Image (tube, rainbow, N blue to C red; front, side):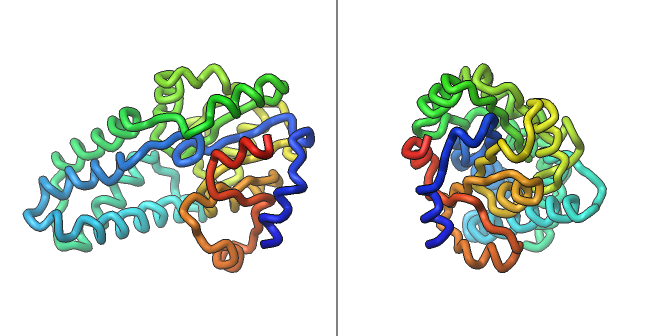
Length: 251
């Protein structure tokens, strides 16, 4: 594929800063969302096991709709509120009346398990060590729960690698909106032409970074169809890899 072939053209010396996504990019956060959703369903219906898989699919779609609405000009809401509203809508679609106490406890579980389940992606520290040795500025911008990125990276003793760890509380916006990328560039005092972005979500990461003028490495770890995403969003990632570990080959 043409985009993948261009990986051979990758030159690290073009960049003096690299921005990373958090979840499923530099961190493996496991099935925290599934386990939290499972708990909520178990408290809400006897048939939780029979609908769990379909419920998760609907919940993910409703959450992405929340982000898309805000990115399209809707009023900003915190990530935890986006999850709450997506949960409420999803439960009602399965004819389950949301119970406020269950929702509140479930949302607390989402935040808690996100931190507890997080672990570094395989090969992360070796790559970060190499990049820091080369004097490249590193940053993280995430759509995840406010405050969790700093908490997780500190817990894993990874925070010292990054000159910037930012989330929506810093700019009241979500990727793919321009504000997260512009905020990071300003804080790192770098220009977009010499900044590389690395992430796994096509809509939030690739679309956002390309529109902001950054080169992008798309980690297609879900084996999504590149051509379908290109047709849908009208942008093309600069480079495509299938796993984070492939970065070692080019960095």
